[in-house]
Image (cartoon, rainbow, N blue to C red; front, side, top):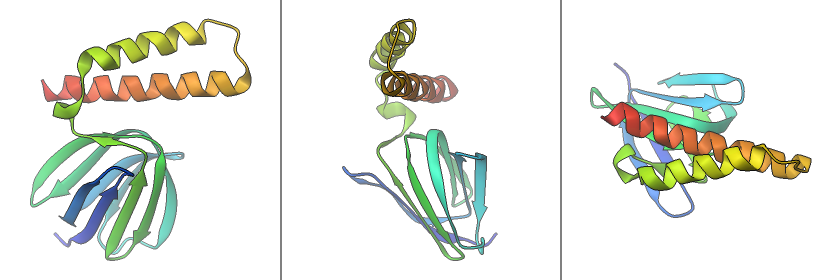
Length: 134
């Protein structure tokens, strides 16, 4: 299968850099899969799973909001955070989920509501990734 160069970058680190056969991430329009020679585009990246097929093996991760620049021979994903399942602190993710759910039960401004929904989505994506690892 044809490959392309993939970089997944966060403000803190170069999360992934190398040849990939496929990358799948959640976008604002739903799940998006990219193969080599994809038409050039830019897409928003949403909180959720990131799956990379590199050297015939699938790599699972979780990312938060960001952008993907897709070119025929290169994809660059810029995201706030990216974590492998083994890097996720399950207790911290559970506590974050509970806090977000509690905040959503209160009367909130529109901004606070959106922040709480984002925090809940992030916590649930992190917990989902750790559950798949088991």
